[in-house]
Image (cartoon, rainbow, N blue to C red; front, side):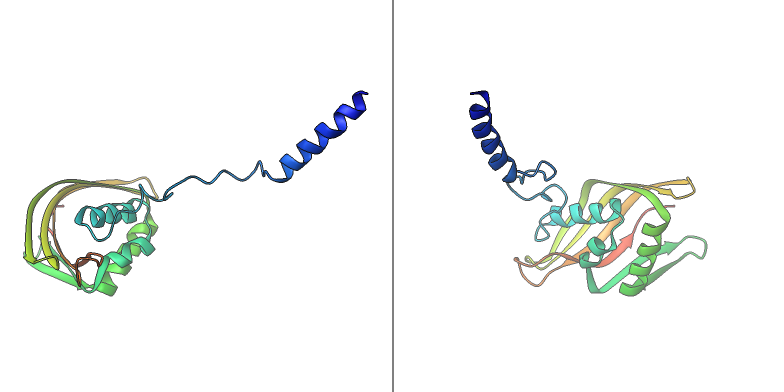
Length: 171
C-alpha cells in the first residue's frame, strides 16, 4: 500500500523536477542592466554611461561615448601650454589606464554650467568630479576638478557623443 502511494508521488516529483533546473536562476522582469546603463539620449544617461565605463574599466562601453571627431584638451602646467589629442590617441590612453588600474572610482558632482548651443543637438556642460585610481601595484591617485564637455548628437532621438573634452582639473 505504501508503494502505491510512493509511485505517484515520485512520478509527480520527477515531472516537476524535469521542468525545473535548480542551477539556473529565475528570469526577472525588466532590464537586468537598468542600473548599469543610462539612457544615452539624455545628458544624465551619458554621464551614467561614462562613469560606468570608467569604473568597470571597459573600453567597449567607453568608445561609443566618443564622437569620431573627438578632441581631448589639457593644460601642460610645466610648459604652460594647452595640449590635445584625438579619438585614436584617447582610446589608446584610456585602454592603458583601464589595463593598469585595479580600481577606478568616478563621482560626478554638480553641473556648474549647462549651455544649449543648438536646440537638442549640442550642449556644453561643465561638471565637477572626484576621481580615484588604484593601480595594480597599489599606488592610489586622487584628483578632482571640472570637466568641460561639448556633447553633440544628430537629433533628439540619437545618443549624446563627446566631441570635445577640456580637462579643467589641477593635478
